[in-house]
Length: 293
Image 1 (spheres, rainbow, N blue to C red):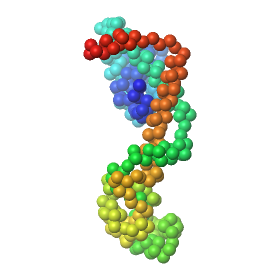
Image 2 (spheres, rainbow, N blue to C red):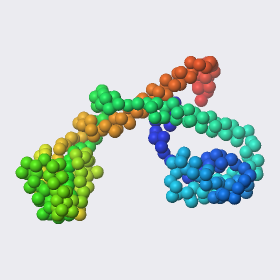
Image 3 (cartoon, helix red, strand yellow):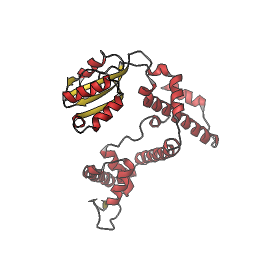
């Protein structure tokens, strides 16, 4: 099983690996044919076009190009020294090169058949159904609160907003009116709308203590915390050990299902390919080798 199937395929390469790949892609030891190069080591050169092409394919940030070029130079120096010593002609080198070539080909195939857009599709209904069938796998490990808040720079603006809510104006409507007012609107510094928080993610810490004391949909007093005055309303609290609300774990559920779907797609692809090939095994010899180790 190829473990790379089930991890983030967007992880960036370390600089030295990316530079080494560029050494291969650019054509080691190629004679320079033009004066337009970013770096040159002996007869090998790195052009702007080659850097742009590999940067796009490896997800390298253009602002880091200088670091990348320096690593390319180091890789080219080491490669040419290995060539000078005859290391690239050894049987071990060619064996490892063939293994790398096979892995690159496998990765290209899996990228096309398993990771490509459309290879695996998930609907919202698929994700919801998976959650319903596997809810116990997502049991909360800590308390979670869903709340909204508005941070004001001035207490008077915060109190005016709270009064609006207490007089029956819906939270969103009261916020819209406040932001539309030329005076109180300038006091609004931050907004959270029905977001989920744990104790570790809710800051300032005074807000967590406040959230635990409020009744559901109760607008708090203006609380001084951090850089201003908060008005908070709690929409719900769930405790460790409970089954979470689907909205809170939706992305986790989607990622879990995506892994399963990719695994299924991988197994199906492997089965289809195997059906077209003749595969012979020597089980007795395999068992003997296993026992000897």
